[in-house]
Length: 219
Image (spheres, helix red, strand yellow):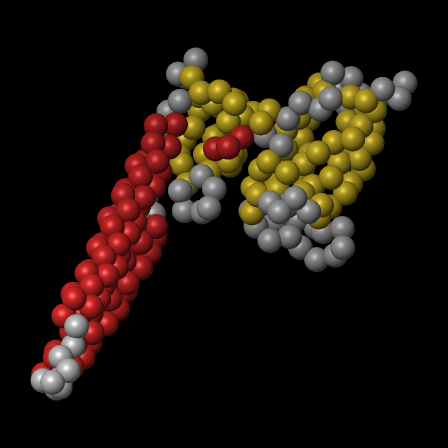
């Protein structure tokens, strides 16, 4: 069962509640001070009632603004939940996706590729911030193959679990650059909405929804 996270809704409600509580406390303090000033005003030099009325109107406008912000936050939270639920429609459908980005989990990540002819060169792996974390030698045979990565960093140590992207720089025997096709196709088994990026689970592969290039009914 796919669960839609409620963190956005909770954060919006908490922010609005805090703002409203703070406003009401200040509003009550303002009224208390105003009442005290009126009770202790000099009868020979009475306070300008128009000025007090103006202050009350201004403070009321602030209160209305906070209420409007609260309503907007609730609408945004509702839209976020609706968008998350829309991803559930991927389940059971067939997707084609650019598979150059995949998930490293438990020090295991792999990319399936297809190549028109044999080629050699290098491949580089980048983290979600676009920083290169690993470079390796590539000796690719024509046809389909798989590149696996155990999370080892070029600078030493292990990469944290997350999304990583691979890029190839390979040439054939004549020195011509070869295009490595990294694409995946399959039926979506489930959807993971727990992270910052929605992840589709396709036959054991974890694919960011942003990598999907087409969606269709299963063939």
